[in-house]
Amino acid sequence: MTTYHHATRRFSRLRLAGAALAALVLAATGTATQAMAAPDTTRQAQSTKTPPPPVPTLTWSDCQGGFECANADVPLDYREPQGTKITLAVVRKKAADQTKRKGTLFMQPGGPGNSGVDFVRNNYAGLPAALRDSFDVFGYDVRGVGRSSALTCFDDARYTKAVTDAKGVPGPDAYGPALSEAAEFDQACQTNSGSLLPYVGTEYVARDIDLLRQALGEEQLTYYGRSFGSYIGTVYAAMFPKRVRALTLDGAYDPDHYANRPYAYDRSQYLALDGAMSRFLDWCAADQAICGFGDGDPRGAFEQLKSDLDANPVTTASGGKANGYTLVYRLMFNINEGKVIWPSLGAALKKAQLRDNTSFLLRPPSPASFDFLGPNVVVECVDKDYPKSLRKLQRNVTANAKAAPLLGPAMAFGPPTYDHQHATACVQWPAEKVSRYDGSFRARGSAPILVLGTTGDPDTPYRDAIALSRQLDNAALLTFDAEGHTAFGRSACATDAVINYLVDLKVPASGATCADETQPPSSTPKVAPPGTTLGELRNGVNERVDRIGDVS
Image (tube, rainbow, N blue to C red; front, side, top):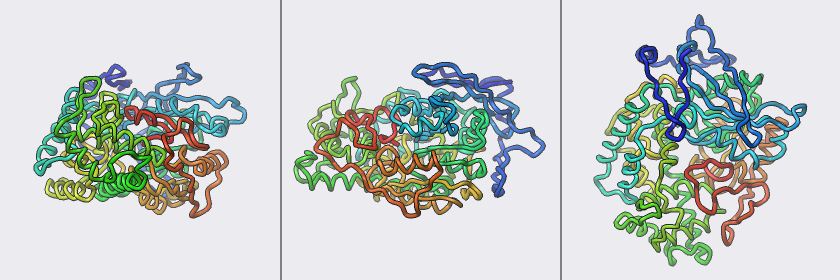
């Protein structure tokens, strides 16, 4: 058996090589048939005569802190289920009293690009006792991420140059260079990870989850997925509706827009992000005593700060350069924290204005960030079906920058990094997309699915949660009336609803709303409010560490 072992810059990267793999990749030149799932069956990636993929054997070993780790070998290409394997890194922590456990809780982080192994290890202690007592808590690094054969495109030096050269206020001729840089990024992906690119889409991720479910001895899946993890859960439910016990989809995607109408999906994200930044600046203007930024005109001060940093970057403690793009990039993630972080954002903007490089908004993306950002672009380019027209691309990118003037231009014309900056790369994407899922997203015949949406979500717009709840055949929508990204861990009300659903299968009433967001304090609290968690709020997002209640 040929096995594709896990790797990354941080975890001893290996590359696929050899004639057997080359033959496999050449044989995979056709696009996989995207047939519609029948109500009680799954889509088949292989013919009915092909044996099903073998269920991986998990050999657990202690990996400190009460956690157990293992590796799972799954098919690289599900059209050849007996062929080349890719190895997935998995982790679990068992419920203390196994006689009372209800099963295994799969936990899926945001991204794409975040480590599910780290997500479980970092968040386990903060999980409600009811979840830790009821379930073995399980996570894994999806294919192409972290310890599971991490993708690489730009190397660290090239990525550093890309984000250092980017601008917070791009000039009128920014589109051409952005298109060229995205093409260079795509070529780097092909050169460095070409053998893996076709196989990292979310259909194959969902198939992996079903094999892991079987390997763990679970008849049905119990799952919490946040942000991009909600899309993974949606695809799983669509493909395997009868195998759903309980799925919590927090910070939900509109799956049809994401996969099949990506320009519509992008536009909503631009507007949601700029809307959140605008509401923060409005608060800043209304409460200058706590915000401390802007001298009565925070919008004007913000625009000036971007330009000033572009013209004269701040030297960081490590000798790097922080410019207007750096500021926008950090705000894009930190605004996800909601109102609880608004005083810290005001203080950090004031520090940036004073050219104080201790501001967490003046931390350029680093190699730890690049390990997340590369797979983030690749997976979405495989998942999304962008029209190939460069003229349509230019129209949409330019329109998005205009519609979202606070943060949008830097995103629209920046290098390929996070969601908003993918179109230029994805329209020119050179690889096959055999692992892409295109629908249906109905999940007909599934058990009830819980969808959570936050009204002021800057990352996954609330309208997406509404759309998902309507596309699913059997879903309940719980609304969190708040700023910030996701609900579980940020709202005692929402957290209780998730516990009751996952443990006892109690679905919230139709139209249920939680309205218990922590309001802007005089300073960022050092102790979490009841029912919530805090992680990196004192220092900003820690290189995209994915913590419940903190980041996407």
